[in-house]
Length: 514
Image 1 (tube, rainbow, N blue to C red):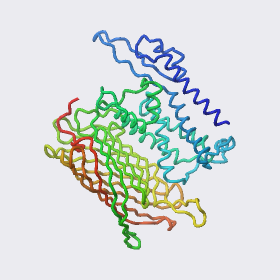
Image 2 (tube, rainbow, N blue to C red; image 1 turned 30 degrees about the vertical axis):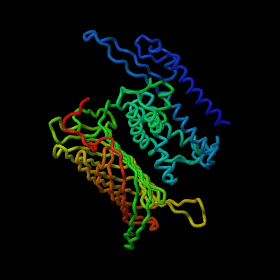
Image 3 (cartoon, helix red, strand yellow; image 1 turned 180 degrees about the vertical axis):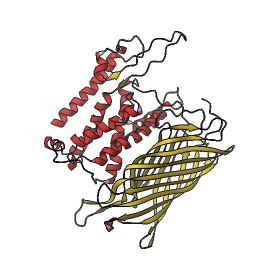
Image 4 (spheres, rainbow, N blue to C red; image 1 turned 135 degrees about the vertical axis):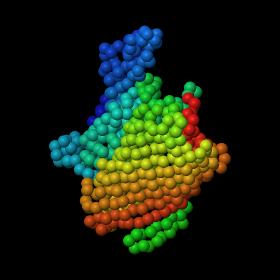
């Protein structure tokens, strides 16, 4: 009953928010009644309306009215998302953590269940919580708030979840990955959804674009529906240079070598594969200004199934930095502070981390249609998790023993693409993580590495054939020898890909027309 009353209270608040906004109109006209800073309806919702400044009489023009924004609406929506997850887990899946009571909540405040590092299911901790944070983040971004203001909302959402919405002891690692991973993942989803809706503007976006934006950013779709886009913040770059690639194919076979015994095992399995790449704000365009966090980012993802499911995505985005090179230079790009969120879930190597580091992303024009693109980041991870899958205690079904560990460490990323525009590329990408297992026993360290090498060849129109060799390497040293496992592995991938541009992601040395 308590859950039901709480749900009705939050629902009533959100409906009131919509009704008050519709009644007032949130007009952008400077003389609209709701534009008054003393209007109680706007203040009660935490909506700061755009107020037109006095006209610039010397120019005879009035500056554009800033958009409305709300501090309260995303708070309500963040709790609604939390309540939805709790209700499903409590009533449908019947998860033990969701059997919340007044006593379980009190135990988080009176010291009976103190904060701790938890060892829950890998995919729940390393993807589920960051995605939950991304929902709260995008609720704020689509309510007219900036990146930095929006980054506060996953913090509130995570803290309330840890203290109110589960019976388990509050988790330090969840409180790190939810806000940090949520902000990085959320900004990628927000920008991708907005790009889908505004690409080729002013032509109205079609139903496919609207469905895609809904899947990418449910909170944004909710707010666009509730407030007719009046809370959309106009802080994203118009017509950013971007490159997207989506493909499908198969993984063919695998080879595995135990570095301790030198035993080599080969598998001839074949499984379906889906992969993609999205670069927003391609470095090298002299007419594009990188003015806000994640004006430039890279997203790589890969999913393989069903024999040995593999899921991975890697996010790297510029948080603050500078451009170098001008319209006459063949070498142009960015350098500065990058944020990273990595997640790789495979049978042999599982690793996830959030972190930041110094790096660069650049393009060198070698010839008229030949380019070298380089991206590299060397960073620090305040939190990372790595290991080799899951194992279960003999005779105790459903009682997982953790054979991954959590700690801090360092990471490095280096990617090179030699591009022949209109024809294809050769790509080398290397990612490495060194994790010190100091947060939980056993003490030790491990090094995890991914390397991808392969060509992409355009075969017809926007379609290209890709072939990659993917290698994984793990070296470890722990006080508990059962956690030690050093090995190398490789698999082969063949895909047919759709490209958003036949330029293969290269930007002409001449500034693009706007």
